[in-house]
Image 1 (cartoon, one colour):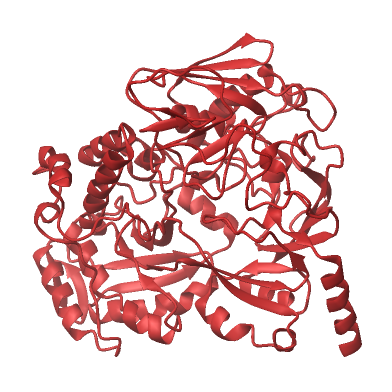
Image 2: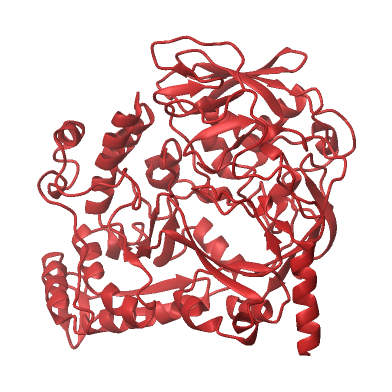
Length: 621
């Protein structure tokens, strides 16, 4: 589950599925029970971990010292403080200035606890949900957060926000005030057990602030928020700093205890990751998550690392890995045949890449839900077959009879056997080899496409792939563009192939419609950039959303996974089950790390460590 506020990846928001469902104070709630009393938290399955009187999350230190500056980095540029609309490039960190009705815990797969809302209640059929707001909840200007603000937020996001919001909140039929601090959301008919939790993720916006402002436009005027931080200073495209709100209303909310420990958080912008890494080693910022295996293996070997001033650490996580791969745009004629898409997978030599480019750090992805029990493996079970049987003839036959496998090599770089298999598939799909080029047997047009990138770091992966494609007679080329152009082209579906990453939660739900649903394929700016339009997949997603318990959810997710895999919509890449983090040795952190996040906001600046590193660096100079 990805909270709407805590993650400003607007396109990548992960929803939840309510099956066997629990409400706070350890009261179990299943589909046959009715519990409508106000409670402090909700979970998708089983009971919530923390009781009504919990003081803080166990991965938080409530006595963590406050103070200091956290310096972070990002690449590209920004020209807007409005992350909720499709226009502009929003600044990094804007999620810190807002609060949501509820917030997710990092050590449970799908639980939420009160943030702006002090309690939540919902009936057995999940047809509505009521949130009671905290009396003490305040905007940064001191005005109370009201039910009017909550209703305004929903209406504004649906009418003027990114297209995603209209989709995400489409099943909310009514929002109304039913008490001084009570807001009720009523849902449209149909079995959708996740909606109360989706509404808990709602970003709450100040109605009085936006009353005389145009929400649909970009702005560089720091907006009014309610969160633990507010914008202090910025230069567009260069940096932005946030300062901790000393009088933050939510400081004593249990979910916030021990968090938000830095007085100042600064994001510096760099041209690209290579420049940013050199800046990190020079001490220009304090920590970074590394996504390049080559950089992790070789680029940190520097005097600060040898002196112990910089630490490199692998931190195990238990998140579903999702799927990253070369995603083909099905709107383009050359990719409509699944045999062609499968053929392109035979040209990618993961084993060679892992040995020669990634230093053996990755595992090949074989599921859209890898690193979790949701991943399909082997042949489908009897329960999975029951789910798949009604779609026989609409989905690939292999989904019933074969385990999905990815093409493999011996890692030597000789992939001639794989290319032979690719030729067979391409020939069966009507492509012929003529004058060292692959051409369409009917039109004579050559097989040509472009792989669009946003980072030059990925060129080292793409170029060997292009060489293998050339041996098939395919004219593939790479083009790297800036962030703004890349985002615009994805929004417009103006590409052939991109490196696409779809994150998954441990409780998949409504967001699957955004990833793979027919309606989203037709909506510009959606996450279904592949362009999948399959009534069978639409129905499998509906079944997944309606799963009554965790067991059924797992079965239905695995069935969907099989159909996606056998559709050959992507050339699967790889994943890792650890966070790669490098940081200057200036931090203190809680003894317990959560299972699903790095919880940077629960770390703090250790003054003694920071002074020691500063002294050593000064002496070294």
